[in-house]
Amino acid sequence: MRLKVGFLLRSALVVGTFLGLLLLWSSLSPKNDDESPFSKRVRDFLPKGDPAGQFKPVVPWPHVEGVEVDLNSIRLKHDPNHQLNQRQVIQQQFATFKPQTHQYTSPILRKGTLGNFEPKEPEPQGILNGPGEGAKPLILGSEYKDSVQASIKEFGFNMVASDMISMDRTISDLRNDECKYWHYDDRLLTSSVVIVFHNEGWSTLMRTVHSVIKRTPRQYLAEIVMIDDFSNKVHLKERLEEYIKQWNGLVKLFRNDKREGLIQARSIGAKKATKGQVLIYLDAHCEVGINWYAPLIAPISKDRTVCTVPLIDSIHGERFTIEPQGGGDEDGFARGAWDWSMLWKRVPLGDREKKLRKTQTEPYRSPAMAGGLFAIERDYFFELGLYDPGLQIWGGENFEISYKIWQCGGQLLFVPCSRVGHIYRLQGWQGNPPPAHVGSSPTLKNYVRVVEVWWDEYKDFFYASRPETLTLAYGDISELKRFREEHRCKSFKWFMEEIAYDIPVHYPLPPKNVEWGEIRGFETSYCIDSMGHTNGGNVEIGPCHRMGGNQLFRINEANQLMQYDQCLTRGDNAAVIITHCDRNQYTEWKYFKDLHRFTHMPTGKCMDRSDLLHKVFISDCDTSKTTQKWEMNNIVAV
Image (cartoon, rainbow, N blue to C red; front, side, top):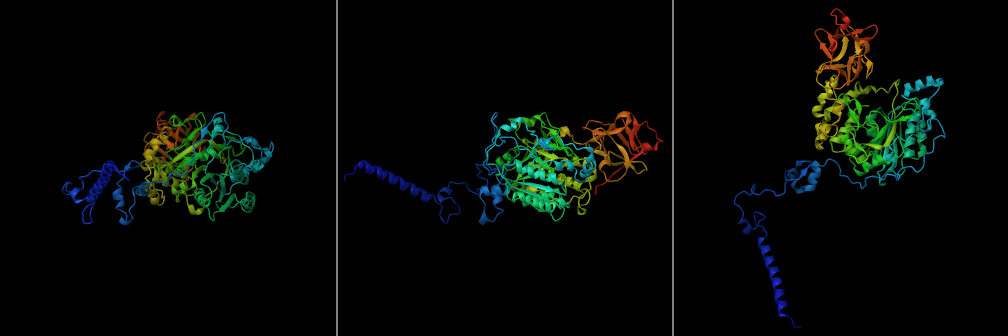
């Protein structure tokens, strides 16, 4: 076979080039006796001396949440035989929670095309044309008056009327019409519905369960978990156990062996509810609305660090009608808020939030939730630590979980297209007193724990509004503060500026107090008492009880005489009334401690009283009148 000379020359050139490169690579490779990874030939060209500081990193340190991270210094803290790679270091040191893992498509609004989760035909009535169907009012005659009052005293509701209404009654649809045209990815997460109860009335409790089963697509309802918080009512014993058997294990009942209170019972419910991916908490006297589930769960299915809250409608505790709550914007939409004494408030949805949405009925951000009804991914709730274990019975837990979610990287969204009716207790309810082991002022202690952990420098505004809590023992919060530090949770200042920016507009930051305490008639046992009146009600005179509450007032540097977010001012016929006020309203009182006198500056008159008639009013100042003399005594919460 003849080989061409040109081919042989080209082959030799290729082989020679390869061998030359191989020889060069070998000469540059470090030998075992080299002191550095560079070969001797290369070292000859390097600068002499310590190379540290002579080479600057071309790529800057990685940034995590805006903080520069020196990965090498973090690695040196670990065993050199088990050093972490860059991704592991970032995750271990700075990642707050598990990343989102759900695959879910955002809902789509198709106007004119009925949504894929909308019922195709009207619900069947529980009882054909029965009482309360369609949420129509049920008004009982006078012959039921005594039994109705007895049921209100025992349960807080008209249980006589409730027991006449079907467990599966139809309700009115209060949703915006746009809600009917949302289409949802059917890969929704499954849920465990958790219902905590203590001495609840029978039909209001079971109507809650019935409504969930009736209006929740079965493939997503993993279980309903009922937590009995040490009830002693007969109807909540064997009768309840037998009744729930009709659902073949879908409804589970767990009983606490001592009274835990609503807050810790909810944490127990989270541990007992193991089947659903999401936990949905409902109060024990609710009725879920039409197509409530998909809108509530879709945001969580998209982002596991989102907590959602349905719009909560008001079920009348006597007539069982359902109406939207007040206090919202033109569409009835409101954000959850608080005043600086930590009383729950609602403020209208403002323009800043509306601009974040493309449609009228998209979920919107809220600084806080009311606390009784919400949905949260189960694993995420556990990563948050559930509720603070030091919170007792009821109160403040709604703010704690709201702040924790927002400040630690999550979101709290109100969902206009998911609506749930809630029965609010009527006046005359005797309540469920906390057990003896809890002690007094559990709600105030809860508030203090929350502000001490989450409010930073803003806690001074709470103490200005609740001065009686300044010396209140609130227990150990070191673990909660450690959680906040380890999870790199944001400051309350960030939260107030970015999320809760509208609260000071509606509830201005309070001025410092000049004096605070009970306002006692000088050398008497009678004190000024708001009697629970607000928004224009008269204040009165009553026996001093030194328990604070309706007898606790404060006068601040702005000359406002206040109780919570209410100010004392002059009403009709010179009566002293109490009404809501902003920072610049009703700045009209001076307290002269040495003279034991409150002067109403606009009139130049003095605060006066009638111990016999229990009235408080203003009259011409007269130094000889003992009824115009007062003393303001501090009251410390215990």
